[in-house]
Length: 461
Image 1 (cartoon, helix red, strand yellow):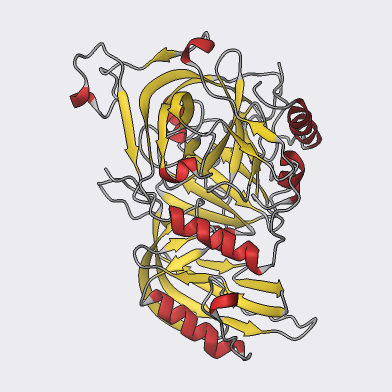
Image 2 (cartoon, one colour; image 1 turned 180 degrees about the vertical axis):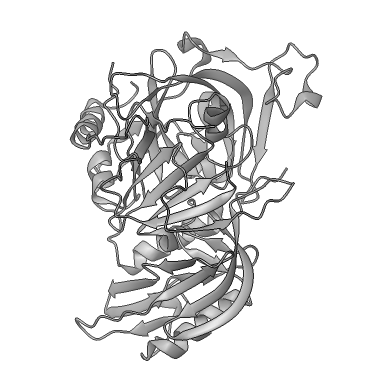
């Protein structure tokens, strides 16, 4: 592997320590853990200890800055078993990178590991590959450098290029003939960010969760990213991106088409920055659910909210929003933003904090807290269909630099409404594409019910 020995050892130790198993009543599980990019495990893995501490102004400013860069990343253009990745079911959230959650996935023969960004807001899985313009590693404050693996088409005995006659080749018009290699180009709507290259087919290494000796590797199509631009060169998805969207080219779609899993997956977001992702998980055991609003042109995980309840204040208001794992905070435009902030402001009963340019926070509604003072104020979203979604952690506390504040973790959007990761904390969110519904169930992401994945097996061959 193209990484320092100390990094590989650290990764291996973390992976081995996280292993556990649960009985699944003959169901197989394919999934992996997820970690917040500011979490302590990430700091240990990268050997970095100068990341901003959670709860500080720098912490929230950094996360909101990443959101501003990537909120516009939308593209410009029967019964099955759940599965898990072989390398680890862990993902990592890293301050220097652009997306919230990362996973270590294993591809090719011999297998190479890649730290890829997980994103429900895009579709294509791509890796840096024989690249002329990409990120080869990151430098640390202590002078060390972590080198990333770069996929090499000739370096994997199981790889082969995808030809233009493939149903997954979207740029067939650019092909001189049907037997030439299919090119791809994905343009994102933010800061000239794009990835270009050609499509490749190779093995994604998976293993069943209830039988750690049973491999379930599958051939998938992904992008051999030769040229990355914009935010991808500045730390956002530096070692690849794992699209979890609804299109046929996304990995969940491929796993379902191959009959390895049902057409569904879940993501769990723990309050400590740890979490899980499970392929093949469905909505049979959820507490609440609501249908997706499907759009013919690039469908997303878009749902309808019909009512906002803040404390004792109930307001009927219907609006659409996208559940997006790649966004740190929740972004609402008017009238939803005005409604939730006005209700919060009237219910909180605290002195409003006045911001200054030298100490500016990304949040508009912040309030002064006395030492050791705690305040609880519930926010409920009533979803289409009538089920309530209790936001378990809507409040952000900010301390240090002479301030002690409570803020509403909602920012104003100038385009689409986004339910971000902070409103998903404390839940297992099920993206059930088979039944076209979003499901949710409260979870600490540590233990599984009999039918759900939480951990995976070790991968080293």
